[in-house]
Amino acid sequence: MNINQINIQFCTECGTKLHKKATSGSPMQCPKCNKMIYIEPKVAVGAVVLNNNKEILLVKRNTEPFIGQWSFPAGFVNPGELIENALMREVLEETAIKIEVQNLLGVHATKNEQVIFIAYQAKAKSEKIFISNEIQEATFFNMKKLPKLAFQHDGAIIKKIITDSINIEEKNIFNLSLLQKRGIEADVLIPFIRNLENKLGKKQAHKLAQSAIKEIAKKQGDQFSKAMNRNDLKGFKEIQDTWSGAGNDIIFEILKEDESTLDFNVSRCRFAEMYKQLGAPDLGYILSCGRDFSLSEGYSDKIHLSRSQTIMEGADFCDFRYSKKDQ
Image 1 (cartoon, one colour):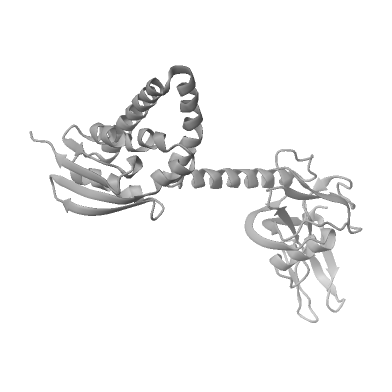
Image 2 (image 1 turned 90 degrees about the vertical axis):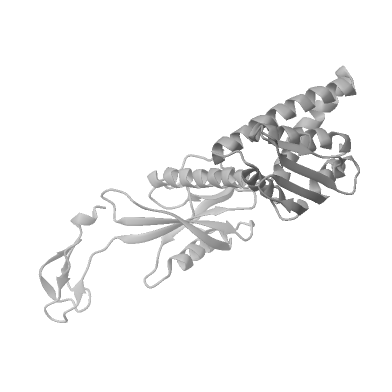
């Protein structure tokens, strides 16, 4: 129905004939009771309900338009009803599922239609479905295996959900602590190195792994230097400050710090604890500690690191001694 073709000839309050027709966007005041007569589009709400497995709740419509096709639980907002309450009511009425309303996904209007559709994301508090006479069927679908959806705006809403989900996952990846990143690396590298040990022998396998790790660390040091546009010891300390990442992954005490010296001891190393838990304490030095010398070398050829012991190798603490090389 075209909202622009709707008109009202009589007052909706007292029934008095209007001097002219009230049309959309052009209200008319009743000459008798002074009521302003408006014609406005109806507001409908739809809930994109996700369960704990990130599956989407869809319902098969039992009314026109698009009877027998899949869409989101949806319905019209009652006069004076809050949008959030309308969402919860509609989902409950159609499927008996209680929801927690979350974020707004979008507002949609189809040309020449009198309905504005507001979509929200919601979380299912339960997954036990009871079908009402308003729908034919309801179920949770895998986001990658959705049926054809009824309305034109449904596709845009699904795209928004998927895009937001990807952005969140990427954000979580970028926010990983250094320990978490090393853990992910270890899950791949440890089995690979063990396989090399079986084929080449332990000594040769470790030599190859260490060479590759050192090369990577040296490139990282060079990238840090270029990104910071500096290669002094003070700048390198800023890199070291990121070691503690997620709180207590690395606990260290600064012993001496000036323009030419950076001395500190590490008293706790959760990296060593992690490799031990993974059953690879012998590989911890190669995959983690072995990077330190190459990292500083890549950052600047003017910085020297000396270290006589590490927790990874069984010592009580790691002794890092950085110094500025003599010109």
